Amino acid sequence: MRLRGTGSGHATDLVLLGVALVWGSSYLVAKDLTVVAPVVVVLTLRYVISAVALAVVRGGTRAPRPGRRELGVGVLLGVTQAAVLTLETFGVSGTTATNAGLIISLTVIMTPLLDGVWSRRPLPPPFFVATVVGVVGVGLLVSGGGFRVPAWGDGLMLAAAAVRALHVSLIGRLTAGRPYGSLTLTTVQAVVGAVLLSVIAAPQLARTVTVLPLAAWAQLAYLALACTVFAFLAQTWAIRRTSPSRASLLMGTEPVWAVAVGVALGGEHLTVAVAVGATLILAATSYGQRVERTHRLAHVLPPAPAREPARL
View 1 (cartoon, helix red, strand yellow):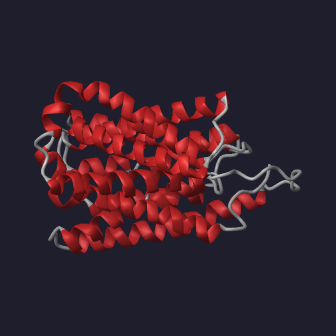
View 2 (tube, rainbow, N blue to C red; view 1 turned 120 degrees about the vertical axis):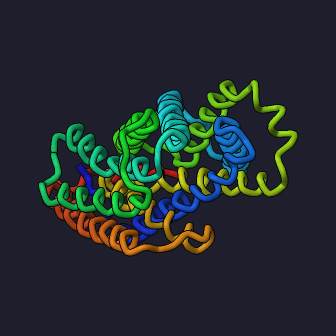
């Protein structure tokens, strides 16, 4: 087994942090959009714009047509990706921000568990100490409204956390050692999501599109181009050069960026609990990265014969 992510680890980490940043900023944008359009319509338009943009970019690169196996992997990842976004969006509408943020953060624990089971090489206990500290940090980060009895939205957020962990793990497992194009895989995922959600949103789509204000279209463009095209392309590219567990930790800083954007642009206030929570998440992420990297280095075998690098 070759070690992934050692040659350009810092660049890969920065890309994953960029993904977390734009996803963190998406909450404020999506919140505004759901006021003027149904959730399923927002998701559909986000996917359609993303699919068109990716198809144009891919056409400009003259990338070869995907093989049957590569196409199959893209379709599977497209289904899991669409499931994550749909469960998250509807889940938030049926629970508090406190419960939603705490439950979705369980992805940080679920991902390495799946990765360890599939690789038959479980991570050491210190890694899980880091993930628990991170979960505590998220709890402080979003606990302004206090806890309450679990609602139906909590169940959806738990399902979203599980599917997100599965999605991240699948990217790592299904693309390892394969010369798949990250751009191709991301394009297929966007097309799959656009088709699935268009079918669901069909009854509301036409009448909503005709009355959307210009500001809403600008917000949709940001969600599509930054939070979907860039984020999912970058996520696929980066996970293939590191481990799913490490990627999950880095993208687990998403709540920190959500708070930063909320304070800077949304007029929210930074409380002591929020500051402590953000600090715990960053500390847990940094420590967890070191534990995970040391663990991978300890299990590296002699380098395998050179293979064709993954193409963009």
